[in-house]
Amino acid sequence: MLRSKLLALFILVSVGWISAAGGEAAPETRAVKAAFEDVLLELQDAIIERGLVIDYTGHVDKMLERTADAAGSVTEGGSASPYLNAKYMQFCSAALTHEAVSANPQNLAICPYLVYLYEARSEPGVVRIGYRKPVFGPSKASRKVEAKINAFLSDIVDQVAAADY
Image (tube, rainbow, N blue to C red):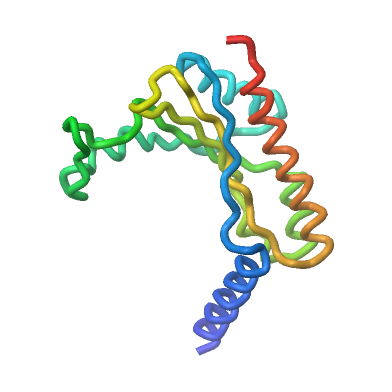
């Protein structure tokens, strides 16, 4: 019973946060003309240079190819994916996460941070790099740390986009 009430409260608060934020936050993306593997290495380096550990790398391109028949989503031309390459990386900053959850314990939902890169079949040679904008609680303290984390993620993506390829 208590578990059900807590779950209902969490859902209501989460919906309230999304509504307060004007809907889900749109991802931030930059484009570069470069080889996908070069951009991938730059992104990994940009994260590691900040003393962070990449917890997981997701291979969206391979997952879409592998599951296309089951999902019934083979595209025109026989491809199962709109991507030539697509990956995402998850990681967290202990310092920023401590600050976020100190502002509001429910800010735990922002972790892990997620950055991604992809090369669309429709634009070979153009790699898009971006990050998912975390959605925080409406408190002033949460908004302050939200700005820090978004600037932090934006700096990583900007560094990769500005690299000399």
